[in-house]
Length: 363
Length: 236
Image (tube, rainbow over all chains, first blue to last red; front, side):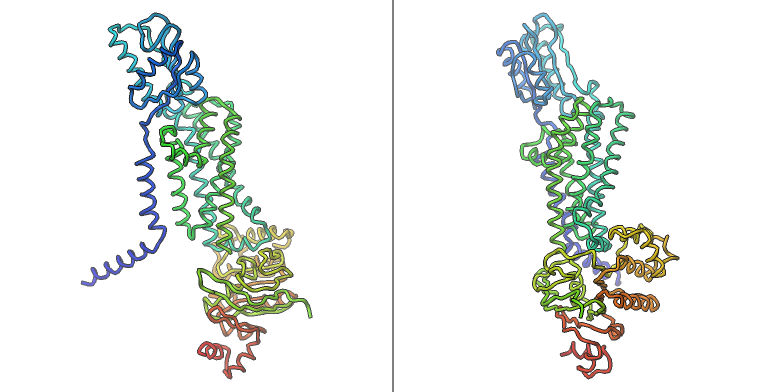
């Protein structure tokens, strides 16, 4: 008879603990809220794809653009002279470029001559494949409506990932995600564990400057993270037949900075958190939006502007751009240096925040 | 008379609006062995952490090893600090932990062997810290705290929960270290142990009394023991 009473007493205590524990409330309220906001408003994998059109005359270009605008999720971002659409794709300003050759147009496909070219940035197959298919369908439909099934033909050129392999599109981001999760977890948990165990306080009393302690703590993890990133890259090359990139050294050089950025963030989280569990929670609260808004799970271009602005803050966003540039687009130091700057800025901010939190906790 | 190692007046610290320590005035010279005595939560640990430079006092003035106590820049090369928890790296062996402390203080490798021998740690030297019993762990932690022969040694409840042999050994080492010219400040809530100290300060609810001797406190209270004197003081 006393069992229900005991069960209720235990439940009452558990309920009180739940309400008084900030971590539990964060797990129950903040994380689901974050997921609802991100999945509900930011994540739109079928959003518009940027298309550039190039034709010999502006009338031809406008006719093609008019047809494309009738298609779902196609956004014509540029119209220009022959060659400009392919250039827009290669410069990253458009995902798909349509090159209408001399004396031909999408509006008049019965004219004789070479095929109409669709140039696709296939480095993000998830974004480009559906849109390419819609454009190809629109082309053949136009032919059918003009009662000439033969037509002049259509040639789709898939750049960077000719076979449209989804694993290739995924691998550059996977390197970043693997390293990011490991570094945030290791950074936050190692410091939280030291604080819980008392060794952090014992360390602070030793004659070393804060920056020396920080650097000493970071170095082994930076080595581990870099090796981990290189290992994932090697697996991509050997198992998934990713071409060996010329800029591999540049990407390898970016890895230590990428690791450091997440480690200092982990330290900032741990400096604020009271326990290892709280640090873990903080780490999850960071890397979840980072994965969603960086372009890893969903194409960056499909995110609304506010989510893109937020996504620009995450180092993962910039690492994925650099890794995609190096591994799929054959770029080198230029893309890596360009993307290293925001990662370095993030790391610097992380150091400041970690120092501030640490000062408060001891002060 | 030598210059004080610690000379602070009116130290205070507030956490979340609660004044955990107030009016702490300490003067400790080389060779002094001073006990901060009182119940748990009385402010002893916060006092030690302020003297170690781990927290900055909100009020008060004075110097620790010649540097302003509120400057945030105490000379940590000359301070030894042992906190209440068994705070050495659990994954490392005793030797590795001592080697780390020696390296941080710029000491030669020989210092590790000396410490192992001095504190009788030879038989557990290659054992991981996490595998040590409480007594051995405390000895190792003590050895790490004093490996650099600090001028000021701060010990937070070093003998709490220890067997009598280890407790006596620790008190013996503390006395020896003070005799070599270091100032030793140690917190304890054990009044039997405190009665053996040459100088003590009584803590009660964050408020520290003046430095005195156990005999003077006992005489002032007209009590038979320090325990009875402290109880009488607490009831007042």
